[in-house]
Image 1 (cartoon, rainbow, N blue to C red):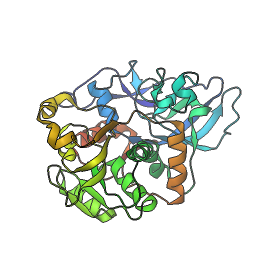
Image 2: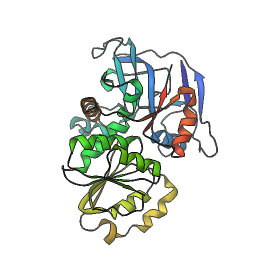
Image 3: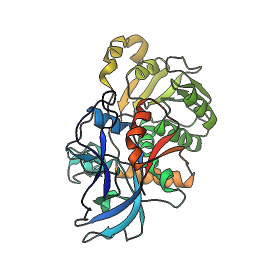
Length: 342
């Protein structure tokens, strides 16, 4: 099979082609695993974090990609949940132990043995992959393959972030950054919380115009003051400045949820500007999001199909994965980027 393979860490400023196209042995599903012929794989900022070492893969070489859509083409022994021909998706959560206190209370995202697709196990920048049947999800016919791919991470992690805000209908919500995840959250909020006003902060006027087009009441630059105080904010950016700036707009007792696995370390000095009285006093909260659970993925896929939520996508061929990552790094963003595998 063909795959785009990462063999070592790299800085994209120094190496514009960190992924190498290779032909690898065909995959064989083991007990209770399914073999998927991949048709689409979403591209996530986390892949930049993996390539540049902010969340280092646990093995090299590694095939990245954790927003995978394809068809089941073979079954390992004991598989019952799927049959050959089923269309399925795979998300960031590749596996968890199922036995620890976190797994037993439904918080498998916190499991010490959490394994991530495309970081701890080979992912979707390839023609085929294998995964346990317990960590694959049926995909509704409402979506095309490329539309379904971003739902598996950008959508699911956005859904988890929204849950963690404790938002009530009619309260004000802020979104900082407006890429793959935020543009799906906005569509979700407009349905689940019809009386909530949405305020978007993005550094690109293109992103701000896109947010207004999708229904944001207001959109401004990262450093601007929102016209109203915000009861909750979801930060989807890879850096610290938007978090600090957002705290100034947060209502007393409000919560900002950081939807990112890592923050880039190039702007740590921004944290030195954190002023307790201005940014945090009066019971404001900062909460992080760690991974996703299977429940998050299942619930979001069901909601997205009912609404339905339609991602805006930019399509690249598998062989163009390096260019797609460079475009993401350069913030050439409108919705989500997706690789197609023929």
